[in-house]
Image (tube, rainbow, N blue to C red; front, side):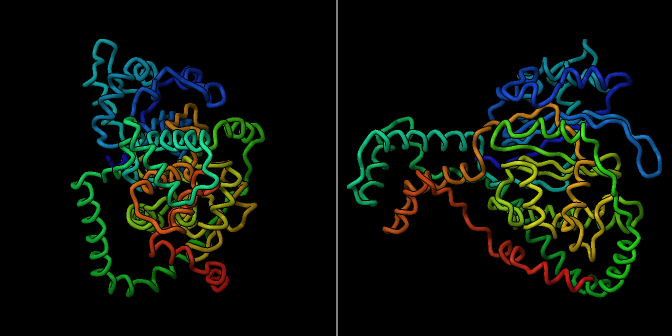
Amino acid sequence: MPHQEALTVIARIRDGQVTPLKKMLGSIREHHESWDLVPFAKLARVHFARFMVFDATHDLDSDSLPPQLVLLTNVDAPLSDHLEELATVCADGLDRVFAHCEDYPALNARSPTTRVQFLEQHSCRSDAVHVNRRGRSVEQIRQEESLRSEIDKFLDANDFDAVVPATLKERITAFVRGRSDLAWALRPPEPPALSWRIKEWAHKYFSLLAVLLLSPLILLCLPLFLYLLRRHERRDVPDTSSASAESIRAFRDDEDFWPHNQVVAVGLFKPGLFRESVARVILRMADFATRHIYNRGILSGLNTIHFARWVTFDDGRRLFFTSNYDGSLESYMNDFIDKAAWGLNAIFSNGDGFPRTEFLFCGGITDEKAYKRFLPTRQVQTNVWYSAYPHLTTKNIANNEAIRRGLSERMDDEQTREWLRRFGSGNRLSESGWVARQLDSLPWERICRHCK
């Protein structure tokens, strides 16, 4: 199976074209069932996709920032094949949408090659990307959902009340083996390519080696860093403004059509070399964490996120965060406050107007009212949003994968019973890695009390 990639394309919108472009894109509530202008559903390796518009604004120095169109996709590798598909299968729609942008090829110059060149020239590298489970492809997700559904039908069509668990598992396995369209399920999914796994291994251990070699210097500079950090934090001015009732209503109107939702927030970085340096280091740490620590479906205690990414743009002046997650935005915010405040504070405290933090990790969003007032002021409406599996939560997907894996595993009686529960109310997620569990178990409330 392939690993997953995140494509981010940001293009400046031509003068006078923002309004007609927004009208063309519409909103999620207008076409949540289908939007065929750019037929993402025809691209078999796309997990999620979206279009959104960043309106013109100003940075902290009052320099103007132009309106921009953003295309985001989460896809199964290789990314080059995805770009080719966008430029061919989605050519007509891509032309109609990006014709509103500067530098897009003229009508007589459009071809798969020039479209790919435009997408590559306007693509932006993500600073960090969270993937619920790397290596789990769209094909695997859909196949395993079909497998569970067919086994459910088999169980419903027969009376197994008097059958012991081990025998029932054998009969389920025999049923799957006897179906030529399901026999693939008796083989484990292939892991991502060896070359990618070697690259990830090298990134992990070279990063750890670099930190080890620099640790004496880090410890030496730590007192000065903490002094400068607190000096900056005490000078921070939180944004206490509120978003308009109209904009909040628009965000809410785009929610809850499916079991999962989306959010995007955009903000300016705080000025100065110190904040810029801290932000870069923290984003590097976030990249390491999402790739090597929180890579088993759980991100700092949150198990509801399918994909998320952090992207620096506008020459490093702004950052946007976007996520595809299960449940409502309200429950999502509560999860961050209760389970991952320290991580969110570390990243977003470098953004202008964020609730005041203490020693980077404490304070911040633990002021629930301040955070829930602040987030809508930085939210941006997503115009078009596509999901390849809109009715599946992260728990559904993990449960289906465990059902497939269990078919070919040897189990004792208790393990068999637990596996059979997955056809009812099981849905138990796999456990995080050891390092992730230690980070998530840190007593942040007690730690933060000593920071005041």
